[in-house]
Amino acid sequence: MTAYEGELENSKYKLLGFENNKNLAVIMIIATGKVIKIKLSEVLNSEIMENLNKMEVKNIYKKFYSQGGALTAYDLNDRHESSWMIYIILNLLLFTFYIFTSIAATKPIYLESLGIIITPGTFLYPLTFLIVDLLNENFGLRLARKAIFFAFASNAMIIILLYGSTFLPGLPGWKLDTPYNDVIIHVSSVLVASSVSFLVSENINSYLLCKIKELTNSRFLFLRIFLSTLFAVIIDSFVFCYIAFYGSMQNNDILNMIYVQIAIKVCFAFFNILPAYGARSLFKRYMTDSQTK
View 1 (cartoon, rainbow, N blue to C red):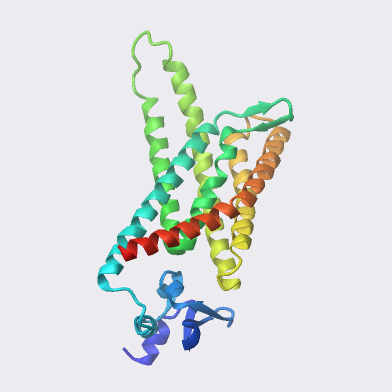
View 2 (cartoon, rainbow, N blue to C red):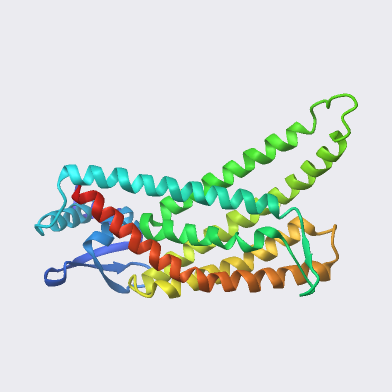
Protein backbone atom coordinates (compact mmCIF):
# COMPACT_ATOMS: atom_id res chain seq x y z
CA MET A 1 0.00 0.00 0.00
CA THR A 2 1.37 3.41 -0.95
CA ALA A 3 1.44 6.40 1.35
CA TYR A 4 -1.12 8.07 -0.87
CA GLU A 5 -3.53 5.14 -0.54
CA GLY A 6 -3.06 5.19 3.21
CA GLU A 7 -4.01 8.85 3.37
CA LEU A 8 -7.20 8.19 1.42
CA GLU A 9 -8.48 5.90 4.16
CA ASN A 10 -8.44 8.62 6.81
CA SER A 11 -11.92 10.05 7.27
CA LYS A 12 -12.02 11.60 10.73
CA TYR A 13 -8.69 11.14 12.51
CA LYS A 14 -4.98 11.13 11.78
CA LEU A 15 -2.24 9.64 13.94
CA LEU A 16 0.49 12.22 14.57
CA GLY A 17 2.70 10.23 16.92
CA PHE A 18 3.14 8.99 20.48
CA GLU A 19 4.22 10.21 23.90
CA ASN A 20 6.35 7.37 25.21
CA ASN A 21 6.58 8.44 28.83
CA LYS A 22 2.80 8.58 29.22
CA ASN A 23 1.84 5.80 26.79
CA LEU A 24 -0.34 8.22 24.83
CA ALA A 25 -1.32 8.43 21.18
CA VAL A 26 -1.39 11.90 19.64
CA ILE A 27 -4.44 12.12 17.36
CA MET A 28 -5.62 14.96 15.15
CA ILE A 29 -9.33 15.47 14.42
CA ILE A 30 -9.25 16.17 10.69
CA ALA A 31 -12.46 18.21 10.56
CA THR A 32 -11.29 20.78 13.11
CA GLY A 33 -7.52 20.31 13.21
CA LYS A 34 -7.67 19.84 16.97
CA VAL A 35 -4.99 17.61 18.50
CA ILE A 36 -5.91 15.26 21.34
CA LYS A 37 -3.88 12.85 23.44
CA ILE A 38 -5.46 9.53 24.40
CA LYS A 39 -4.18 6.42 26.14
CA LEU A 40 -3.36 3.63 23.72
CA SER A 41 -5.70 1.21 25.49
CA GLU A 42 -8.59 3.66 25.06
CA VAL A 43 -7.78 4.24 21.40
CA LEU A 44 -7.99 0.50 20.73
CA ASN A 45 -11.52 0.39 22.18
CA SER A 46 -12.82 3.53 20.48
CA GLU A 47 -14.22 4.50 17.10
CA ILE A 48 -10.91 6.18 16.28
CA MET A 49 -9.50 2.84 15.14
CA GLU A 50 -12.19 2.61 12.48
CA ASN A 51 -11.15 5.93 10.97
CA LEU A 52 -7.39 5.47 10.68
CA ASN A 53 -5.57 4.09 7.67
CA LYS A 54 -4.01 0.63 7.76
CA MET A 55 -0.50 1.85 8.43
CA GLU A 56 -1.62 3.96 11.40
CA VAL A 57 -3.60 1.06 12.85
CA LYS A 58 -0.54 -1.16 12.48
CA ASN A 59 1.64 1.43 14.25
CA ILE A 60 -0.79 1.74 17.16
CA TYR A 61 -0.92 -2.02 17.69
CA LYS A 62 2.85 -2.23 17.38
CA LYS A 63 3.31 0.53 19.93
CA PHE A 64 0.77 -0.97 22.31
CA TYR A 65 2.25 -4.46 22.30
CA SER A 66 5.80 -3.16 22.58
CA GLN A 67 5.08 -1.58 25.98
CA GLY A 68 5.69 -4.86 27.80
CA GLY A 69 2.38 -4.87 29.64
CA ALA A 70 0.23 -6.09 26.77
CA LEU A 71 -2.08 -9.03 27.24
CA THR A 72 -1.28 -12.45 25.87
CA ALA A 73 -3.39 -14.04 23.15
CA TYR A 74 -5.14 -16.17 25.78
CA ASP A 75 -5.94 -13.13 27.90
CA LEU A 76 -7.24 -11.25 24.89
CA ASN A 77 -9.62 -14.07 24.02
CA ASP A 78 -10.81 -14.25 27.61
CA ARG A 79 -11.34 -10.52 27.70
CA HIS A 80 -13.20 -10.66 24.42
CA GLU A 81 -15.66 -13.19 25.81
CA SER A 82 -16.16 -11.21 29.03
CA SER A 83 -16.73 -8.01 27.09
CA TRP A 84 -19.39 -9.61 24.97
CA MET A 85 -21.17 -10.98 28.04
CA ILE A 86 -21.40 -7.46 29.43
CA TYR A 87 -22.56 -6.19 26.05
CA ILE A 88 -25.33 -8.80 25.93
CA ILE A 89 -26.46 -8.00 29.48
CA LEU A 90 -26.64 -4.28 28.71
CA ASN A 91 -28.60 -5.05 25.54
CA LEU A 92 -31.10 -7.14 27.49
CA LEU A 93 -31.51 -4.41 30.10
CA LEU A 94 -32.03 -1.82 27.37
CA PHE A 95 -34.64 -4.00 25.68
CA THR A 96 -36.44 -4.76 28.97
CA PHE A 97 -36.70 -1.16 30.16
CA TYR A 98 -37.59 0.10 26.70
CA ILE A 99 -40.42 -2.39 26.08
CA PHE A 100 -41.84 -2.00 29.59
CA THR A 101 -41.85 1.79 29.49
CA SER A 102 -43.35 1.75 26.00
CA ILE A 103 -46.27 -0.46 27.02
CA ALA A 104 -46.74 1.30 30.36
CA ALA A 105 -46.91 4.61 28.50
CA THR A 106 -50.32 3.64 27.09
CA LYS A 107 -51.87 4.64 30.41
CA PRO A 108 -51.65 8.32 31.36
CA ILE A 109 -52.03 8.76 35.10
CA TYR A 110 -53.18 11.85 36.95
CA LEU A 111 -51.50 12.74 40.23
CA GLU A 112 -54.20 14.80 41.87
CA SER A 113 -52.02 15.98 44.75
CA LEU A 114 -49.53 17.50 42.29
CA GLY A 115 -52.02 18.28 39.54
CA ILE A 116 -49.88 16.68 36.83
CA ILE A 117 -50.40 14.08 34.10
CA ILE A 118 -47.62 11.57 33.44
CA THR A 119 -47.16 8.00 32.27
CA PRO A 120 -45.74 5.17 34.42
CA GLY A 121 -42.82 4.76 32.06
CA THR A 122 -41.59 8.28 32.78
CA PHE A 123 -39.73 7.12 35.88
CA LEU A 124 -37.88 4.20 34.28
CA TYR A 125 -37.32 5.38 30.72
CA PRO A 126 -34.31 7.59 31.67
CA LEU A 127 -32.49 4.37 32.55
CA THR A 128 -32.35 3.58 28.83
CA PHE A 129 -30.20 6.68 28.35
CA LEU A 130 -27.88 5.49 31.11
CA ILE A 131 -27.53 2.07 29.48
CA VAL A 132 -26.81 3.60 26.08
CA ASP A 133 -24.24 5.87 27.71
CA LEU A 134 -22.54 2.84 29.27
CA LEU A 135 -22.53 1.10 25.91
CA ASN A 136 -20.94 4.18 24.38
CA GLU A 137 -18.31 4.46 27.08
CA ASN A 138 -17.25 0.83 27.02
CA PHE A 139 -17.94 -0.34 23.47
CA GLY A 140 -17.97 2.77 21.30
CA LEU A 141 -20.56 4.54 19.18
CA ARG A 142 -20.88 1.82 16.53
CA LEU A 143 -21.84 -0.97 18.94
CA ALA A 144 -24.05 1.38 20.94
CA ARG A 145 -25.98 2.17 17.78
CA LYS A 146 -26.31 -1.53 17.02
CA ALA A 147 -27.90 -2.00 20.45
CA ILE A 148 -30.31 0.87 19.76
CA PHE A 149 -31.35 -0.59 16.42
CA PHE A 150 -31.71 -4.05 17.97
CA ALA A 151 -34.14 -2.70 20.57
CA PHE A 152 -35.95 -0.70 17.89
CA ALA A 153 -36.30 -3.73 15.60
CA SER A 154 -37.56 -5.88 18.47
CA ASN A 155 -40.17 -3.27 19.34
CA ALA A 156 -41.23 -3.04 15.70
CA MET A 157 -41.69 -6.80 15.57
CA ILE A 158 -43.84 -6.72 18.70
CA ILE A 159 -46.01 -3.99 17.15
CA ILE A 160 -46.53 -6.03 13.98
CA LEU A 161 -47.37 -9.23 15.87
CA LEU A 162 -49.76 -7.53 18.30
CA TYR A 163 -51.53 -5.59 15.59
CA GLY A 164 -51.79 -8.73 13.44
CA SER A 165 -53.44 -10.60 16.31
CA THR A 166 -56.42 -8.21 16.18
CA PHE A 167 -57.37 -9.59 12.75
CA LEU A 168 -57.65 -13.16 14.01
CA PRO A 169 -61.20 -14.41 14.65
CA GLY A 170 -62.09 -14.39 18.33
CA LEU A 171 -63.79 -17.17 20.25
CA PRO A 172 -67.59 -16.88 19.85
CA GLY A 173 -69.11 -15.43 22.99
CA TRP A 174 -65.78 -14.22 24.39
CA LYS A 175 -66.61 -10.86 25.95
CA LEU A 176 -63.04 -9.59 25.91
CA ASP A 177 -62.59 -9.81 22.14
CA THR A 178 -63.58 -6.20 21.40
CA PRO A 179 -61.82 -4.72 24.47
CA TYR A 180 -58.71 -6.71 23.55
CA ASN A 181 -58.67 -5.29 20.02
CA ASP A 182 -59.23 -1.76 21.34
CA VAL A 183 -56.38 -2.08 23.84
CA ILE A 184 -53.99 -3.61 21.31
CA ILE A 185 -54.71 -0.89 18.74
CA HIS A 186 -54.06 1.76 21.38
CA VAL A 187 -50.92 -0.02 22.57
CA SER A 188 -49.69 -0.32 18.99
CA SER A 189 -50.12 3.40 18.36
CA VAL A 190 -48.16 4.21 21.52
CA LEU A 191 -45.47 1.69 20.58
CA VAL A 192 -45.11 3.41 17.22
CA ALA A 193 -44.66 6.74 19.00
CA SER A 194 -42.14 5.26 21.41
CA SER A 195 -40.24 3.63 18.55
CA VAL A 196 -39.83 6.92 16.68
CA SER A 197 -38.89 8.90 19.79
CA PHE A 198 -36.54 6.15 20.98
CA LEU A 199 -34.71 5.90 17.67
CA VAL A 200 -34.29 9.67 17.36
CA SER A 201 -33.44 10.52 20.98
CA GLU A 202 -31.10 7.60 21.66
CA ASN A 203 -29.07 8.26 18.52
CA ILE A 204 -28.81 11.93 19.45
CA ASN A 205 -27.78 10.92 22.96
CA SER A 206 -25.07 8.60 21.60
CA TYR A 207 -23.78 11.15 19.12
CA LEU A 208 -23.59 13.96 21.68
CA LEU A 209 -21.88 11.73 24.23
CA CYS A 210 -19.13 10.82 21.76
CA LYS A 211 -18.69 14.39 20.57
CA ILE A 212 -18.43 15.76 24.10
CA LYS A 213 -15.99 12.97 24.92
CA GLU A 214 -13.82 14.02 21.99
CA LEU A 215 -13.96 17.70 22.93
CA THR A 216 -13.00 16.99 26.55
CA ASN A 217 -10.31 14.40 25.74
CA SER A 218 -12.29 11.66 27.52
CA ARG A 219 -12.49 13.70 30.74
CA PHE A 220 -15.51 14.92 32.72
CA LEU A 221 -17.74 11.86 32.47
CA PHE A 222 -20.41 13.65 34.51
CA LEU A 223 -20.57 16.47 31.97
CA ARG A 224 -21.13 14.31 28.89
CA ILE A 225 -23.60 12.04 30.70
CA PHE A 226 -25.73 14.96 31.83
CA LEU A 227 -25.60 17.12 28.69
CA SER A 228 -26.23 14.28 26.25
CA THR A 229 -29.15 13.02 28.34
CA LEU A 230 -30.56 16.53 28.77
CA PHE A 231 -30.90 17.22 25.05
CA ALA A 232 -32.12 13.69 24.35
CA VAL A 233 -34.94 13.74 26.92
CA ILE A 234 -36.25 17.07 25.64
CA ILE A 235 -36.47 15.76 22.09
CA ASP A 236 -37.83 12.40 23.23
CA SER A 237 -40.62 13.94 25.32
CA PHE A 238 -41.87 16.22 22.54
CA VAL A 239 -41.75 13.54 19.83
CA PHE A 240 -43.37 10.82 21.93
CA CYS A 241 -46.18 12.82 23.51
CA TYR A 242 -47.32 14.46 20.29
CA ILE A 243 -47.28 11.25 18.26
CA ALA A 244 -48.93 9.17 21.00
CA PHE A 245 -51.59 11.55 22.30
CA TYR A 246 -52.25 14.14 19.59
CA GLY A 247 -55.97 14.12 18.85
CA SER A 248 -56.89 12.10 21.94
CA MET A 249 -55.86 14.78 24.45
CA GLN A 250 -56.06 18.55 24.46
CA ASN A 251 -52.93 20.40 23.38
CA ASN A 252 -52.53 22.06 26.79
CA ASP A 253 -52.63 18.68 28.52
CA ILE A 254 -50.03 17.31 26.12
CA LEU A 255 -47.73 20.27 26.74
CA ASN A 256 -48.16 19.92 30.50
CA MET A 257 -47.29 16.23 30.22
CA ILE A 258 -44.21 17.11 28.17
CA TYR A 259 -42.99 19.67 30.70
CA VAL A 260 -43.48 17.27 33.59
CA GLN A 261 -41.71 14.46 31.75
CA ILE A 262 -38.77 16.71 30.94
CA ALA A 263 -38.51 17.85 34.57
CA ILE A 264 -38.58 14.28 35.89
CA LYS A 265 -36.14 12.99 33.28
CA VAL A 266 -33.71 15.85 33.90
CA CYS A 267 -33.70 14.92 37.58
CA PHE A 268 -32.88 11.37 36.57
CA ALA A 269 -30.09 12.74 34.38
CA PHE A 270 -28.45 14.03 37.57
CA PHE A 271 -28.91 10.69 39.31
CA ASN A 272 -27.53 8.82 36.29
CA ILE A 273 -24.11 10.34 36.90
CA LEU A 274 -23.31 8.27 40.00
CA PRO A 275 -24.39 4.93 38.47
CA ALA A 276 -22.32 5.80 35.40
CA TYR A 277 -19.17 6.19 37.49
CA GLY A 278 -19.99 3.07 39.49
CA ALA A 279 -20.70 1.00 36.40
CA ARG A 280 -17.47 2.14 34.76
CA SER A 281 -15.52 1.15 37.86
CA LEU A 282 -17.23 -2.24 38.06
CA PHE A 283 -16.66 -2.82 34.37
CA LYS A 284 -12.93 -2.17 34.66
CA ARG A 285 -12.68 -4.31 37.80
CA TYR A 286 -14.57 -7.18 36.17
CA MET A 287 -12.39 -7.05 33.09
CA THR A 288 -9.23 -6.96 35.19
CA ASP A 289 -10.35 -9.92 37.29
CA SER A 290 -11.27 -11.93 34.20
CA GLN A 291 -7.83 -11.30 32.73
CA THR A 292 -5.97 -12.54 35.82
CA LYS A 293 -7.91 -15.81 36.15
